Length: 345
Ligand SMILES: Cc1cc2nc3c(=O)[nH]c(=O)nc-3n(C[C@H](O)[C@H](O)[C@H](O)COP(=O)(O)O)c2cc1C
Image (cartoon, rainbow, N blue to C red; front, side):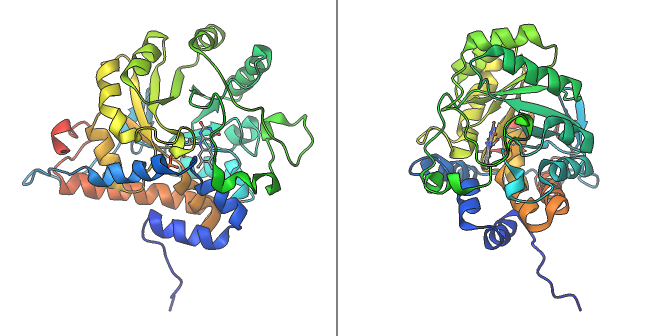
């Protein structure tokens, strides 16, 4: 008889991961900025939203598939960019890329990955490259973009919410003890490495970015109608409504609470995604109902990696896809297209 504990949902993975990881690693992954008000708000705001299901609809067949930037995906659930997957599992982002491929979705690989972008794209599936404009020196950014492009990345995701790194106090005393390794900076000796103080880009940098790459540009970290409109004006093909998982400006609005104004402001000129606090299929359903084309999942992927490597990360995606299908059936929305604003109060 197999009495091994099998996690039934993302929260159970969180509990298992916490038991497995060192306190320093746990702090790095879990931390939010300062009092973690925004971190908590991301979840509280999802819980506050009420669903209005419609019944006696034919939900015999549920289709969760959709597209993002023209790319087919099994469900509107992508993997958010996060640094240092090696803290969670030895195969690091190579394992994550395989999980994304198994789940038929997109992996957004961070510039701060443990592995290089070439190793990650060699592993599998569609990969988008997330970067900061770190190096005030545009030449180094350009080299990185060319590498990502040559490696086969299909979009550049520019994270704009980190002109300085957030004060993640839970993690501040111990972060230097962690074995940081930045795969994209192979020229540096492995071991401890800290980035500069932040990534203070401006709209002028977005314009510059457009002149040096033909890849679609996704702007990540937007929380207001004004900035979303500027993003579309500057030619972004998508924006990600995000507060960086509560890791940057504490007190910032929950991403789900910022979604509707962003969707209204861009008015179909670009795609809108959301991340922050996605833990259940119903969170995906609510996000899509409020106008997100897709969501990105952050910490749960690292929990999956910590518990069971690539298979664990794939299982996180599978659970969320399955829960989404259940929620769609129970709310009378058999296709992604049929999920509309009226579903949420
Ligand atoms: C450990 C960790 C590392 C992260 N690293 C990055 C990063 O390198 N680049 C980036 O744009 N966002 C980064 N983020 C933010 C995520 O992309 C995403 O916005 C956030 O995790 C979503 O919230 P969730 O964790 O509640 O799902 C990181 C988040 C975590 C938890």
